View 1 (cartoon, rainbow, N blue to C red):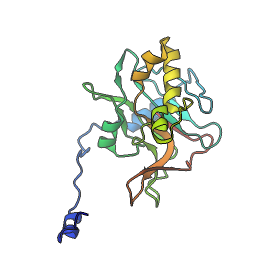
View 2: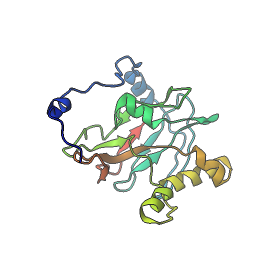
View 3: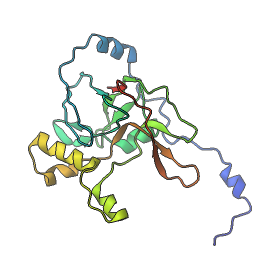
View 4: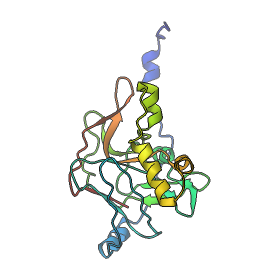
Amino acid sequence: MTETPPDADARRAIPPVICYPNETLPHPDLALYRAAREGAEKVGEVVAPPREAACFRVAAGQFFRIKSVDGPQVGDLNLWNAHDLSERFYSGKTRALHGTHVTTGERLWSSFPHLRPMATITADTLGWYGIDEHGGSVHDVIGTRCDPYTGNLLSGVQYHHCCHSNLTCALADELGVTLAEAEPHVHDVLNVFMCTGFTRDTGQYFMKASPVRPSTFWAR
């Protein structure tokens, strides 16, 4: 067993330094977005049934809203550039720039070499939740997505009715390609409405009951 050094407490007491200070990021004009949203007209709607996935397309300058319609639902969100699927949502860099959970005024950044905002969060009716006593919060960019490969690794099961598989099927249907062609484009997600965090003692990823209720929404 490794012995605890005599200056262990002093080493632990060193204050942290923010790796990516974000004060210099361009700030979105939320007042402008609010004014535009108030005059916006609804042009489409897509319903993702429970334990399923769906694709929708959003043009530059348009808004989309993700809304809970029945109970404490949560969802895994992927984003792609419709003209170039290699540019997609980069959850790791979004996490580095904004933190483990995102809310109004923060942006969802795209992959290298682009690194540009794919979406700006303009409204969040769960913004009141903050960080609870367990360290949990909502809309995380730390979880990857449930998938059959991890299920097989941990439990020896092949479960394909899960987030990864659902996203793959929805993308394949949208693009008219095979599952094998679609799967490489599925990436780490934004967990919309999901309440998650890391345990204080072991640093493990946890989830708890979501505070979302019907009519709660998250808008870009």
